[in-house]
Image (cartoon, rainbow, N blue to C red; front, side):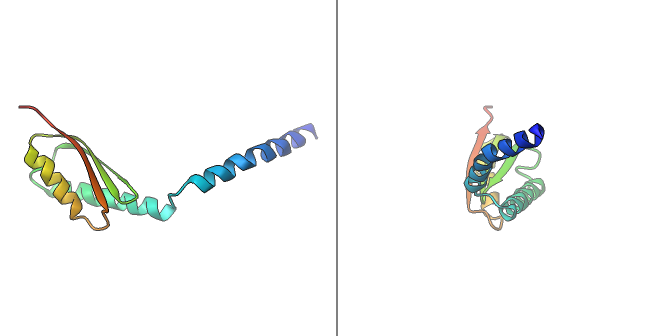
Length: 103
């Protein structure tokens, strides 16, 4: 009986925390799937492109905004990566944080 009472009390105390967390989350399952699809499309485009193929570029998508991190060899590759991402369907914006390797 004490155990059941403890669980009931614990549930009552944690309920507002769980509700608050649910209300603060703005990502939906659909948005997560959309972002995952965009990331996959960007990686596919990069893999097919001779300029950026094989470069150490990390791609993360959040609410339609693609974030690029990693390294490229030149400013041309930096700009090419941005151009390729902007051509992918459903991309809202690109944050290109790529570093250009010094020669």
